[in-house]
Image (tube, rainbow, N blue to C red):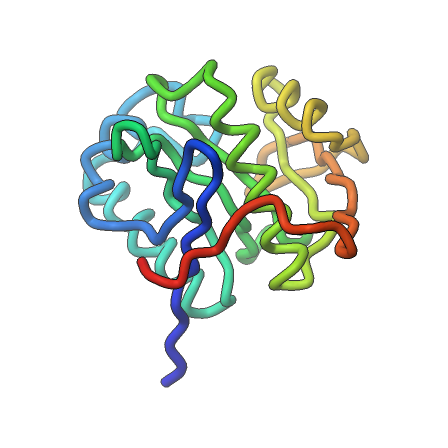
Length: 183
């Protein structure tokens, strides 16, 4: 059996790391809200647990997936970012979610830049897409700030969505973040 170590990535204010069981209460709280409907919610505690374990399985099967975000200053779990490539997706997608208390601080921008840079350099996923729900103006604004451009209408798991294309990373430039070898 092949094992895969989930890399940790450090930015100025965040650590992108492997999902952990301690993240489950934050996930349960998030998925209990109507706000979670744009990322597959609402979900109950068992479905939140399944999401957590599925994230680890995605890394094991694909060699990439969703990192969980910890704010360095408080050591608090604040959301997730990374690549999803499952049945029903047109191609690997760069996705992000912040918990309510982490919004409005520029953390999503910082996390997405680091994740996008890492997957381009290490997984060959350069110029990826993001699915954005029509009602999700915050994600659309973030995609624009990241330099992504609206590409087309699409569908994900039976729901209409906008597909945004991220710019390719210039791999000759230095990396944006530091990869940590320990978890």
